[in-house]
Amino acid sequence: MKQRLCFVLLLAATVAGCGGSPTNQQASSETAGARSEARTIAKPTVEEIRQVLAAHDKGLNDKNIEAVMNTFSTDANAVMMGTGAKERWMGPKEIRAAYTEIFKDYDHGTLLTDCAGWKTGGADEAGTMAWLAATCYAQDSLQGRKRDYTLNVSGTVTKQNGQWRFVVLHMSNAYEGPETK
Image (cartoon, helix red, strand yellow):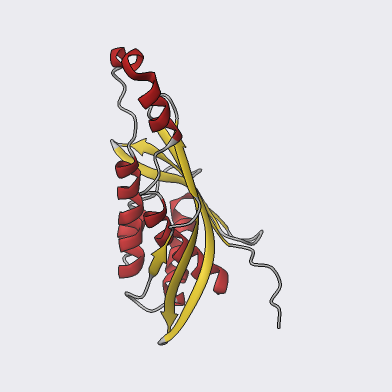
């Protein structure tokens, strides 16, 4: 159950994590300057990818399964992964079932995240696929009891019917080492 909760929090945390840093693709295009003027392919922006994450985050906070599923590709090979070996859901049917269970693991409207720490991302030259990774600090509650987590998240998005959607989303509990007394 804690792993499912961490998955939820990690997704929410990613929204904030991708907003402040330019992608590798953006840095490359800035240095390419005039050479890229002849290209007509539109590359993804950080804001476009953040919008996918923001929509996912809102769906999680609202416990709205349709909103969350709308952020995933409908491809049968789309996958969501958690921390453990058995935390792997492939295709829309399994991903929907996983979120249905995840929604049971936190109180509605209590997801708070901060990805101000480490984060990175990039996009392919064709502008058809992008990726992100972040370490995030998250908080929620279950039955009114506040919980804090550190999570790692990584994801790949691709264009489907003109919209960016996750084809891979991986969230896990960040290792924090043994507790000392």
